[in-house]
Image (cartoon, rainbow over all chains, first blue to last red; front, side):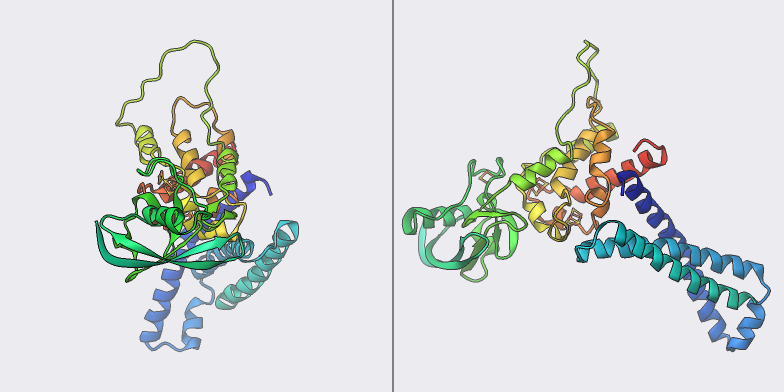
Length: 112
Length: 240
Ligand code: SF4
Ligand code: SF4
Ligand code: FES
C-alpha cells in the first residue's frame, strides 16, 4: 500500500473516531434516558419506527464503525502478528463488509 | 571518597544470548553508572565491552539498560537508580548486541537516513540569506527537537520499535520534524513521504515512552504528532 493510501487511512480513522465519539455519547445518553424513564423495548421501537432522523443517525453510526474498526484491526494485526500485505488488507475489508451488514440490519430494525 | 559500602552489580555478558555476571564494586559519592562499569572493566574484568566517549552527556554513546530502563549512563547517578545496593546493567533494547554492553547502533542510524534526516540545501544559485526570527513557530519547533544527542534511549524505550522492526522510531522522526520546520531545507515533501505511513509517524501510539526516557527531555511524541498533521495536510492536498 502506498504511503499516500496509508496516510489517508489514518485520516479516515481519525475522522471516523470523531464521529464515533459523538454517536456513542448520543446513543448511550438516549438509552440511559429511555430506560430510566421506564420505557419497554416495544415502546422505544414504537418511537423510533418511521423516524428518518433516527435512521439517519444510526446509518451515520454504522458508517463510522465500518470505516473505523477495520483500519484499527489492520493496525493491531500488523503490530501483534507478522501478517502484512494484500491478504491482510483483503481480510479487513471483508471484516468491514461483515460489520456493514450487521450494522445495517440493526439500523433498519430500529426504523422498520 | 570510598565510604566502605559496596554495590552488587549484575552485568550482561555475551551477545543476544548470554548471562548476567555479578561483580562487587565500591560505592563512591556522586558515582555514575558509567563509573561503575568502567571500574569493573579496569579492576575486575578487562574483557568487558561497553561504549562511551564524552562522559558529560554530549556524545550519546553511553546508553545502556539500567535496572530495566534505558538511560545515558554517564549522567545517571547510582544513588538515583540503585535498588538498595544492587544494579543491573544490560545493553540497550531493540538493537543487536555486539558484545556485553555494546549494541550495534547501525539499524538506529540507518533509520535516520531512511527518514531523510539530513539537511538538503537549495540549489546553489546565490540568494539572500534566510532570516529566521526566533519567535516563529517553525523555529520554536526546531529548537524543541534539535538538541538530540542520538543516544538511542528513546528507540530502546519504544514498544512500537519492538513490535514493528520497520518502524523508524522516535529519534529519526524527531530529526525529520526539525528539518520539516527548517525553512532553508529543500528536502520536503519527499521527506514527508519517507516518514509517513505504517512504518513511519502513523504507527506511533503517542504514549510518550520516548519522551519519558529521553535524557534531553525532547518530546519526540509531539514531533511525531506534527509529522502526522503535516503528512495529513499533504495527503489532502494531493502532495504526498
Ligand atoms: S510515543 Fe510513539 S515514538 Fe514515542 S515511545 Fe510511544 S510509540 Fe514510540
Ligand atoms: S530524542 Fe532523546 S532519547 Fe532519543 S536519541 Fe535523541 S536525545 Fe536520545
Ligand atoms: S559518554 Fe557521551 S553522552 Fe554519555
